[in-house]
Length: 466
Image 1 (cartoon, rainbow, N blue to C red):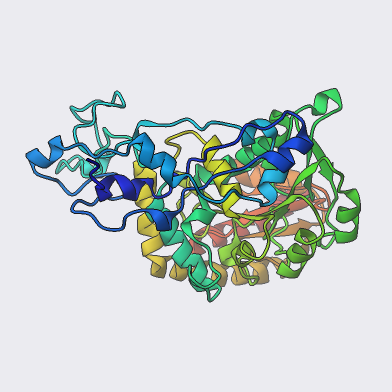
Image 2 (cartoon, rainbow, N blue to C red):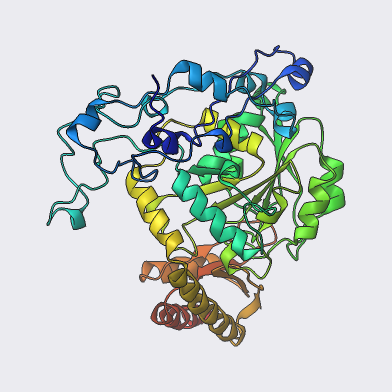
């Protein structure tokens, strides 16, 4: 007899491991014949005597007798839940045939998540150590000797609630749901996964697929494409850092699988209007990826509202910037469920660790701190901009929708940057980027840090030009 113990099901509600049909190597056959089966959250049981925290993967301690009753998710039940409608979205038409036919790695926590766990070769005696603040008194409440839940359902729900509230939506009224969210090691993991899923390698042999980028932009798009031997199509921004949409659409070929739009841009600090994203997404048969690392500082709302409007829009976000949690390396891809499904299939089984997910969940529960920090940084940004403009050797300060400013000096930008850095205040020389001649990018720091930077900037420029 099956015991529908919720401690197994909660962690598995987003273990949407598809039963994939075999597809032909021929791409056209793959586009028409590939089917992805999805396990729906709504079909799973919603109540049970024992609960489990999907972030920390720790159960509410059962009795010793209960622990001997290992919760079972049998093959029959798993297969029954996979008998859902096949997807017909853009992902099934654009993804590589070998990815569509991939049988995902099935980790131990996909089958069982409570009881006496002797299935994953973990060390049942406990961790050799804990984070510093948990050593005295000793607190291993997260059970670090156990693998984390692979699908981070609690974290996904918290992100959905936060972003939906920002655009006046709910999960039941056009907003994003956990099935639309992938959690990764920063947004860089998502960038690499999307290229591997949708782009066939072969650029060095003159074949294969390509991505499109709009320089000046974030450098990791190009790095990941080169690592995966994928072509790179470039359609530069205008000197004012706007998209050249007609040129972008004209440059699209059947090989163009991904179009990366950085908004707000890095190093440009400029947001791309959602109307531009809509126009591109409605005009191409490619996945349009909007990288929103700095969106919380922007006057343009998040593009997550477009995810359920278009089947080819994916939004990348991170906790590294406005949330101030670069050290935990946590990012998200928010997109159509079929795209997220493929990302879950291809990712490493336990890509997000318990310490990261615990800190990330706490941050998403405490958005009051986030909002206050954003307010302070925006005030400091406006003050820094005003003071930079007042310097006679600063030719231009670009408008910013991010937590940094890009500015141009009359001359010697690289020497200026290096000298200030050698004196202990580090900014970033961007003069080697398109349209960024003699430009420096400076992150908005604390009031004291900003004042020291401005003081050194003025003093060093005088020294270099004396």
